[in-house]
Amino acid sequence: MKEELAKRIVESLKDAGINFVTYLPETRLSQIVPLIRDDPGMELIAAASEQEAVTIAAGATLGGKQAAVYMENTGIYVSSYSLLAVGKQLGVPILLIVGYLGGVGDQRNSFLYATIGNHTIPVLQGLGIEHTLLEDGDRLEVKIGDAVRAANALRGPFALLFAGEFSL
Image (cartoon, rainbow, N blue to C red; front, side, top):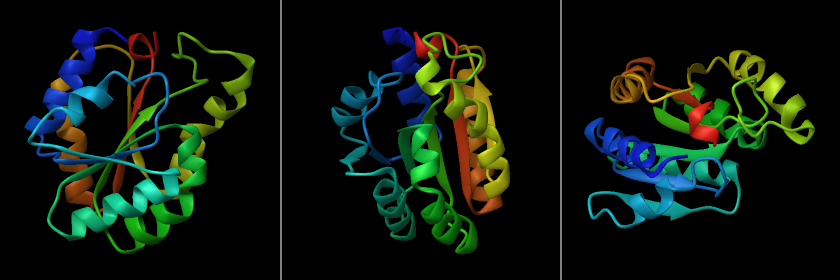
């Protein structure tokens, strides 16, 4: 991903009120990690698993933060219990910043992630989690702001799936 896109993502997250991010590193969007880490207005917490990252973000949200979780789409599978139990059942808004590996728009798509990518959106639908697919920087700021508002209005997780030029 180009550095300019990473900066736009982080600025858009801040503009939308996100001030707490948990993550498990992945490769597609990794340029956002040092930008968030170095921003005094944001708190960045590494986690051992995506399930742990979702649970920590939920706790931060309940404590008054506006939280996001950054993961690759394999983390949707790993964190599905926490997304349902904490996010959906308890009504905790969490923005999911997801590197969409293996989807049609993944510019580095390989056989390793094709099956995972093919099932990501149906899994989100099965969990009742709304999502938006972003493949380029067109209206990036608006889409991120809309996603945060939707998570808050729906009182639950909302996923932003980053593919296309975000996966280069």
